[in-house]
Amino acid sequence: MTQNKTTENNLSVIDFLNKVENESKRINCQKLVKIITEITGFEAKMWGPAIIGFGSYHYKYESGREGDAPLVGFSPRKNAIALYFSSEFKDREELLSRFGKHETAKACIYINQLNDIDIEVLKIMITNSVERIKSLYH
Image 1: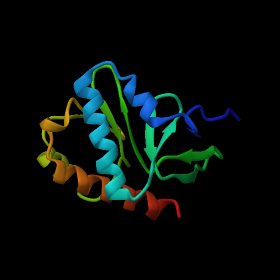
Image 2 (image 1 turned 45 degrees about the vertical axis):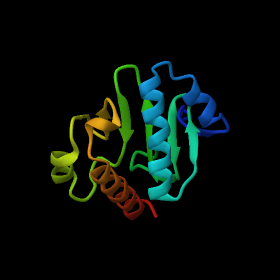
Image 3 (image 1 turned 30 degrees about the vertical axis):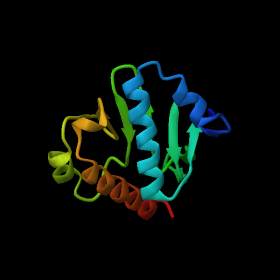
């Protein structure tokens, strides 16, 4: 079985964020670290070379594949900031309808900047996502 590439490591979150070229994106990501830390109580850690994660859980699929993943995380990508949440958290669709400017994929929500979204809705989404993952993976 192959080893997961995205694992928690000892790389510096601060050093990683300081290398984000777009100043606005860098500032938004620094603010996201503070918001997510405040909501979850977890310290920001690097997962792989480009994901900032908070907390962790161990998953095991029926296929036998297993590993660890952050409870919640984000990554400053070239075109957007990718938020990594559970794909099925409480009130997901209703919250996304009030969230502001974003795009979605299965478990990712993409934003351009924090000014485009409702921070209070973001905080609820973080809480609901963490609760969902904790309910699935004890």
